[in-house]
Structures are given as C-alpha cells and as structure tokens.
Image (tube, rainbow, N blue to C red; front, side):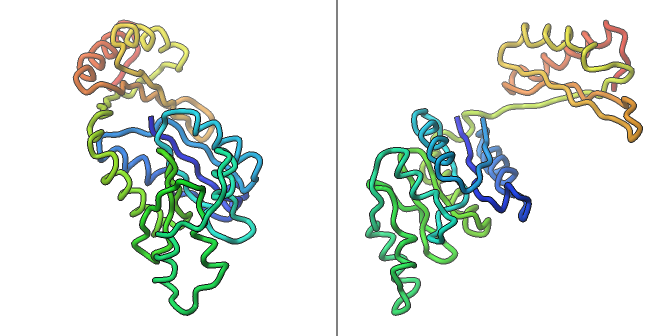
Length: 245
C-alpha cells in the first residue's frame, strides 16, 4: 500500500492550502497505482514520532512532505530518527550536494539540512541540490511543491517501476433520483457481495436549501469487473423503482 504524511503547522492552522495530496493521487494513478491513506500532522515532535513509528512497523510505501529543513520548527528528520532509535548524522552525499550548492557560503546551519538518520539514502533535489532522504520504504521530501513533486516522481520511476499498473482500477457511475442513500444500501450490498473485487460508492448532492437533488452511485475496482458490476447496479436500482441516468 501507498500512504502519505503531509506535515506542517502552516497546513493545520490554514496559512497554506495543501496541494500534495492531489498531486500524489494523480502521480500514482498515472502509473497504475493507488493511494491507500493520508494523514495531516502539525509540527509536534511527539505526535510525529508516534505516527512515524507506527508507519515504519508496516510494509507500506510512505511519502512524507514537509518539515525536513533545519529551522527550529522543522522536526521531521529528528522524529524519523527517534522513531527508529537512530542517530542523526551528516550524510556524505548530502554534504557534497550542499557544498556544491553553496560553495564558500556553506555554513553549519546549511549542512544541518543534510543530517539524516543513520543508514538513510538521499533523494536528489533537481531544484536547489539540497536532498531529501529515504529510510526503507519511507521517503522524506520538502514541503515546497516545486521540489517535492519531481523528487517524488523520481522515487516512483526509479524504485517502483516494476509495480506500475499493479493497482489499476476502473470506475463507472450513474445519477439516481428520488432516492436517499439509505434506500440504496440493499443494492450496494448486493453488488459488493456478487463482485468481491469491486467497491460500491455513493455521493449525495444537496441543494442550497438542504433538499436532496440526486445520488451519484457507482462502482470502483478491478477493470475487468467494472462493466458487469455496473450493469448489476443499474438493474438493482431499477428494480427498486428509482429513476436514474
């Protein structure tokens, strides 16, 4: 499974709007992969460490966006190390990149951006050469989309190409009128029971006055079963007496 942490107080307090989630969903989808979960976290060391310790205990591939700088409000590097009881060390490849970027203006503060948990590997940064890092199948990139997104795509194309198209899915839906979601539950359960590789979803639409307009009812899952599952869903909705299109 693929998961994501999106880290930063600026997201939690509303100073910035997250764009990473939409990007990652799309980057995975165009490679036939799928995001299974995502979590937003502020810059709280204890909570970050606990969340990372939990995800490190799984086999998930996890992308973490944000908090890997060296300012006092950035804690992701330290928390990743703490989650695995590792020391932070200046990575030689990161040092080389940082010195290559800043030359004679390299400072201890700038080198601190290359201090990663022991055993980490670097993720190249094509924008300013200050790398991210990986630990196992966890990938830590900056919060800046201009840097984070190409770094994430590099990880996918370099390390997960053999998985491409392994999670491809199809989707189809109809609009159902004169029905509430609860009235559609029997049809949804029947289709999911008949097609185990399919998930049935419903998305109600409401008018400004709170009145019900329609329910988008659909199926998502194995491409080979979508058409048959959708046909079964249409039949179930029609049999229940609800108009749809």
